[in-house]
Image (tube, rainbow, N blue to C red):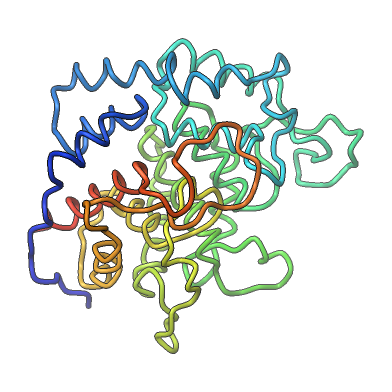
Amino acid sequence: MATNPPKRQAPKPNRSVIQWLLDADPSIRWQVMRDLLGAPAEEVAAERARVATEGVGARLLALQGADGSWAGAAWNHGWDSTMHVLSLLRELGLDPASDQARRAVGLVRDRVTWRGWDWDGTWRGWDWQGTPFFVGEVEPCINGQVAASGGYFGLDVQRIVDRLLREQLPDGGWNCEATNGSTRSSFNTTICVLEALLEYELAGGSSALPMEARLRGQEYLLERRLLRRRTTGEVIDPAWTRFSFPTWWHYDVLRGLEYLRRAGATPDERVAEAIELVESKRDGDGRWPLENQHAGTMAVEVDEGEGRPSRWNTLRALRVLDWYSARD
């Protein structure tokens, strides 16, 4: 049975770090105000509203085509498709109730399709109009990202959730290669599905089954201490120790911790090593770098570049450390 590690207080960020975070895009400012400063709700809401009209959020919204898509595709191999932009808007915290969000997501719902895919997951060819975007397609890593955005923005993603529940593997996780015979889960796929199930719950999903599946998937990560093989104890992939933003479909340790924080999980000794890893990345100025930027075309750049201090990674690291230090 997992035990709670000794309680220790996370070092507080100095004023210069907080000011540096506030001297940023509204999408960062409102989250700093909410998560690090405990600002009054009305002040947080006012700052959050600016995501739709200023900075990165407004620029992303302006790139949407008349057909409802970004980059003319539901999904592509870059990072500028409809799926990727919706994922990023969710990370920015675009208010789902805003007029801008409702219009943009409504266009996706009504006009964007997975060309070639029939409702039963059969490939019909590129000439086939395909299924609506929020019905999803066939890979759980993609469906997880679609359902996470759909749940966040208040769309009906029940069909995707039902499919994901059927695809959970015996070890508790998910893997896009399961259709090719894989019986072991993938951290990359599992984190995408866990975030989707969490958004579904937060949006008021009525069934207990998604939560039960999510908690089994959460245990899959925790049993491996967020980065190690259960059998040998070896680090599964050294790339997971280097923090990215945006993460897209890729897993890393900071992303795993952020999921646990948002899920309201109680930290135990199985996350202690991951927390120590996060703490070790803090530089002499109290900031965290963007250690890795996944190659691909971004619709809009959101950080200062690989190797430089990252406001996004600093914000995410600080609130993970706060979550850990506040445990009972």
